[in-house]
Length: 536
Image (cartoon, rainbow, N blue to C red; front, top):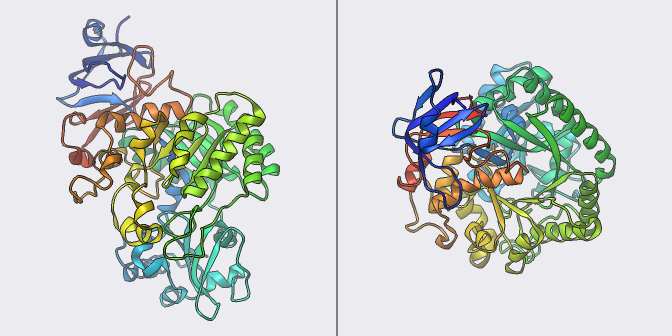
C-alpha cells in the first residue's frame, strides 16, 4: 500500500516498551502503515513527505483530567490568573467592570490562593472597587471562591447562615462571612445565581480551547466535569468540524441527587453516541470524594497540623459513595473520583472494592484523580483493584502553593509522601497524567519535565523535591499518551506508534529522551495530527 504521508528526517519514538527508535513513519488511511525501511519503501508519487527537521515524532498526548469548556468560559471573565498580588486582582476587577457596564455579575477564574494569608480573602476588598454588582472570583483549584458583599447578600449568606454540610463559610470573629467560601456546599448558592452562558458563548470558548490544546500536541481529553447544559455545545463543535481533539465527558454526580441524575446521564450518553460517533463519548461519572489540602477541605485520616480539630471534608458517607459508584457501574459508566487526602483516597478505594463485590468482575477501569496523599496501607490497593491513578504532575513541585499553604497544613511526615508517582508505578498500578486545566498549565511538556525533575521552573531544590518519586522521561511520556489511552479504553487505537494504530502524532523540535529535562518545559510543538489530519 502506498503511504499518504511519510515522516522522515528525525527520530520516531514509538512509545512501545522495549522497542528501538525508528527514523521514518508512514501513514495511510489515518493509521500507521509502517516504520523504518518499510515506511520509506511505501513512498509513492503522491505521498506527502513531512520533514522532521532533526526533531522527534511521538504518539500524541492525551489529557486524563481537564475542564476544557469550563476553563474556556473562565478565559472570558476578569483576567486574574496572572495577578501577583491582591492589588493586581482588584485593579483587574475594576477595569473589567468598567469595560462591561451591562454585565450583571463580575466573574473571574483561576487566581492564586496564596495571595492572602491563610487563603482568607475579604469581601470588603472587592467592595472597594465594585460594590453595586456581585463579584465572584474562583481560585486556581476551583474549590474556593472570593465574593463581595453584594454576592453574599444575593446568595443569602450572612452571620445567621448555618455551616453547610459539605463546605465552609470562612467567618470573621463576630461570625459574619468574611467573603471566602470553600467547597460546593458553600460555593453552590453563588454558582446557582450566575447567569448561564449561552450556546454562542460556549461554542466560542470551546473553539478557543481546541486551538490551544491542539497546539500543545493533545488529541484526546477527559472532560472531568460535564453538565447537561454543556452537551449541545460539544455536539455542535463536533458537527461543525471545530473539534481538534476527541473527548470523553464525565457527568458530575451530586451526593443528594445522584439517583435522579443517572437517568439523565444515560440519556445524554446515548445521544452523544448517536450524534458524534468517533469524536465524543460520555461514558464516565465524576465524584468528588473530598476537597483540597490548601483550603483545608481534603479529607485526612489524621487532623490538619494547623487545625488539630479538623480532618477536612468528606463529601460522601462511605455507604452513599459505594451505592452511587455501584449504581453508575451497573449502568455502564466508568467511575472518575476526585480524591486528594488520604481519607478521601481510602473512601474512594473502599467504594470501588464494594462495587466489585456487588457487581462482579468487569473491565471497569475506575480512575482516582489527583491522589495527593495515599496512606501506605492503600498503595497496593490500586493495582489490586485495577484502579488507574491519574496524577497532575505539575503539582509535584515545591511552588508557593506547596510551601506556603500545603506543607504547613499537613506537616513534614505527610508532606514527604505527596504525589507518589514512582511508588505507584513500582506497585504495578496504572498511571495516567492530566493537567486539571485551568488549575494548572494545559501543556503536557511542562508537566512531563516536572515529573522527571520534581523541580520548579527555577530548578530548585537540587536533586528535586522528594527525588525518590522522580520518573524517567520514557515513563512520563507514556503516562501522557499510553496511560491516558488505557484510561480511555482505547489502547488498541492510539497511545503508541505501531502499524494499524491511529496516526495520532506530535512533532517536537528535539528528542525529549535525550535533551535535559528542564528544557522540555519550553520545547516547541511543531505539529499535531489526529488520525493523520494535521490539527496544528
